Image (cartoon, rainbow, N blue to C red; front, top):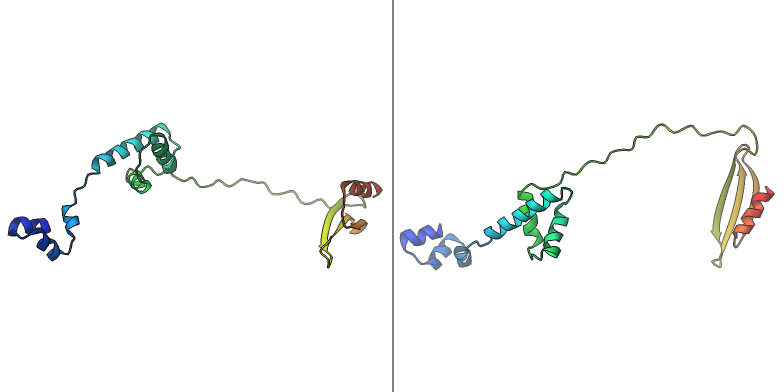
Length: 162
């Protein structure tokens, strides 16, 4: 509109821009990136054809680090979207699992034993540890060892005693 006012009515650019409410820099702006945008689009098309699994990130990093182009990622992404090169995000496939087997219930003592470690702290900050062996049939505690430290040799000895 400011350009038409300057040409038709012969007013100055300053008055025309002020009357239309735009800046003079906006009036004088000449787009010079269309050739570079075509170059970006050409590179993106070639990269996505050659490497089907590459998304925007890999294409941008390749152009930036390997080819040495200094294009802004926002610009490259805008062209990437305009070309509709976005990869389809596949939904995760759920693992098909059969129904779990029912838990086995022991029918006699000493068939199934449970082993557990427990820990607590004393008032002075030292750890108190206990090693428990339980019979699952009658919920009987077969062995309970309590000490400040529970080395593996002591655990083995306790299991052998049980």
